Length: 505
Ligand SMILES: [Mg+2]
View (cartoon, rainbow, N blue to C red):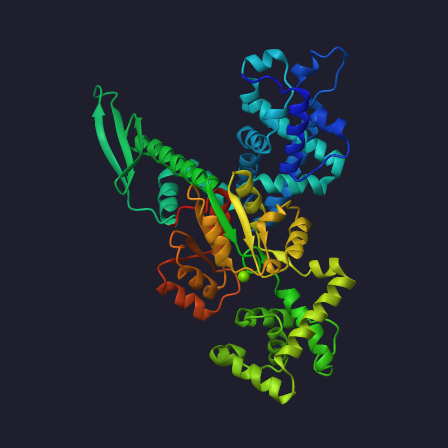
C-alpha cells in the first residue's frame, strides 16, 4: 500500500506529471479536481468536496471521440467492426490505466485512507478513471487540440494494436509473425506430456525459439495448450523488448530520420535560384510538381547549396537519375557556364535561408514535417526510460523549435547540432563509455554509417540505416553487402523504437 505524498513531494510530482504530459495547466484547481479520488474527497472537512468523477465522465467521451476520428482517418480501408475493436482496445481499463501509470498519475492521485491501505493506487480501475479525468481536465483547460495531442502521444502504434487483436484471435500466427519480423531463430512447439484420465487429459506444451524456452502452458487438449503457450511466449518476448529499450541509448539523425525537410530545402534553393535565373524561376515559390520531382533527386545532395544547381536541372528536365554517378561534373559545368563559384552559391544559399528565417520563422518551420509515427515513438521511448539523443547537421535552435512545434519537450542538452562542430562519431564515442547501456545509431546517410562502422571504439554500436530517408537506389543495394549495418523501415522503426529498437542486433 502507498499513502498520499506529503504536500511538497506532491507538488513536485504533479509538476513532473505535467511535464510528461507535455501540458501545463492554467487552472491548477481543475488539475487537482482530476487528481482527487472520491474516497479522498469524502474525508475532507468541507462537503461536498470536488472529486474526479464528473471529469472522468467527460474525459471518457473525449477519449472516444479522439480515438474514433483518429482510427477513421488513419485506417480508410478498415471495416466498422475492426474500428470498434481497435477503439475499445485503446480505451479499455488496461489501456487507460497504462496511460495513467506512464504519466505518473497513480503516484499523485489523492486517495482516502481506506483505498490506500487496500491497494487502491495499484488498481487498474482507479488508474484508468484517473487518466480519463485528467484528459477531461486537459480538454477544459487547454482545448480539444491539447487533449488530442496528449492522447495520441500515449497510444501505441496502430499496427501494434492490430497485432494484439490478431494475437487474441490467432496467437500462434501472431507469435510466428513476431518472430519473423524480429529475426528470431526458429520457433518450435513441443508436447511435453499428456497426463490425467483418458476422459479429461491435461496437455503440457512448451514453446522455444532456437534453444531458448519462452513458455510452458497446459490445456485440456493439444490445441488449447499450444494456444496458451503462444500467448505467454508472445507476452514474454514483448516484455523483453520493452525492457531492453528502457536500458538503451539511441542516437538519431534528424533530417531524413525524424524530420522531412525536402520542401524547405527545395523552397530555399528556389528562392536563391530566382536571384540568378529570374526567367527560369518566375514564381515566388515552387509548385507541387517541382516539389515532387525535387524529392526524387534530393538523396543526391551532399550540401544545401547544391540544391540550387539540382533545381535548375530539374527545371530544365534533365535526366538527373541517370546522372547519379557523375552529378558533380554536371554541377561543375553549370558553375563554369554561369561564371559562378561554389563559394558564391554557398553564401547565396545561406543568406537566402537566413533572410527567410528572419522574416517569417513560422512559415519556414511550417515547411518541415515529421515522418508519420516518429513523434509518438519518440515520446514513448523517452517515457519508457530510453535515453534519446539527436545528432544533426542542422542548427540546434531549429531542431528545438521544430520539436516544440510538434509538441515535444526535448532536453536541449541531448540535441547535438551544427553548432558544436563535432562529428557524429565523437558523440557516439562519448556515449559508448557508459557500458551499461546498449547504443543504437539510426541514420539515413550511408556514408556516415560506414564512417562510424570503421571508427575504432565503436564496434559495439548497433547501426541502423533508415530506408525512409534520403537514400539512393545505389545506397539501397550497397547496404545489403554491409553486415554491420541493418536497414530498417519506418514502420519497424516507429514500432521498435516506441517499444524497443534493441532486438535486431
Ligand atoms: Mg539525414
